[in-house]
Amino acid sequence: MVRVRQRWWPGFVALSAIWGASFALIKVAVDAGVPPVWVACWRCLLGAAALWAILAVRREAAPRSLATWGHSAVAAVLLNAAPFVLFSYGETRVSSVLAGVLNATTPLFTLLFAVATVAGERRPGPRRLAGLGLGFAGVLTVLGVWRGAGAGSVDAVGGLACLAAACCYGAGFAYLRRHLAGRPESATALSAVQIACGGAELLLVAPFVAGAPHWPGAGPAAALLVLGALGTGVAYILSLNLVRTAGTAVAAAVTYVTPLWSTALGALLLAEPVGWNALFGGLAVIAAVALTRPPAPAGAGAGGEAGGGAGGGDGRSRRGFPSRRKARQPVG
Image 1 (tube, rainbow, N blue to C red):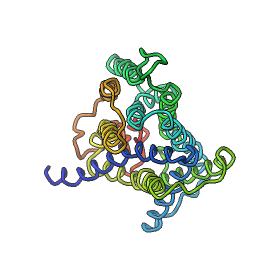
Image 2: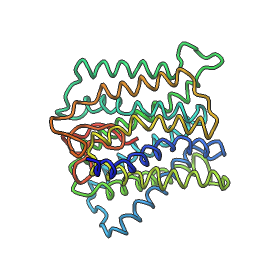
Image 3: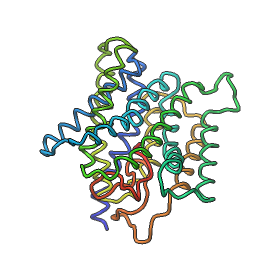
Image 4: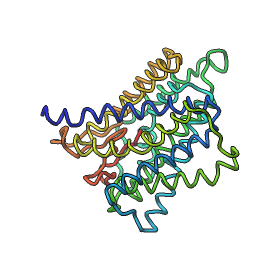
């Protein structure tokens, strides 16, 4: 048991920290004047470059099926292009702390879309319905709706943009489960194709929306490099390795830890305020995610593959891609 813990613990910490730091890195880029659509575009292009490099090192062939590429292009809109732009735009109006907390609602949206679109998905019982209600209350607390539009209130447009991004993630993971879960290719290959599609989609749009890219300075450029190569590239591999070494039950816990990292980094590195409503609302959202997770089957321990996940481990199969039967929740 000790050997297993030593194997997965470093990867767990690294993955939660990388995904938690993504919101601070986005904030650095948009505060330097990088348009949100270019933040998203660079994030995809750099992430795709990292994943294709890993494929080359492994001498792994890229998928050739037109159906795989077509479904990956749709998934890229929902999981990369749209939410990356929305989060980047949202962070021009709200703090990275709030963006990270609102991202934690992704598993709740995933549950709603899965119930609505995936055949055979169990309808939520009283426990999971209570979790959805608690999550909704947590979001309202984070947004501070009782303050209206007065001083000290959260920017509604920015907050709703972040929620819309989380909603896109929920729809995207339901789409993945329905159309790509059964593909034979590895998670690395499918992720490389998906993120490359996202980069191509954004590259076609960005010049018309925001003009030509410009050099933002060494600091913001480094933030974009880390955000893309690590947060959108290497993190996918860390997620896969975590599922394989510790199982989805452990990988699921990344969803709970990621908001803690985003809050701590936003407060310590960017001097962003952490209001009581963000703190308690975020805790309510995390508790809601815990309530909406289906119970793990008997015998699914730390090293097992059973059990739906939230966060980095999204119910992946042995090959690392979400299985049709168990896939539930999203990457952070």
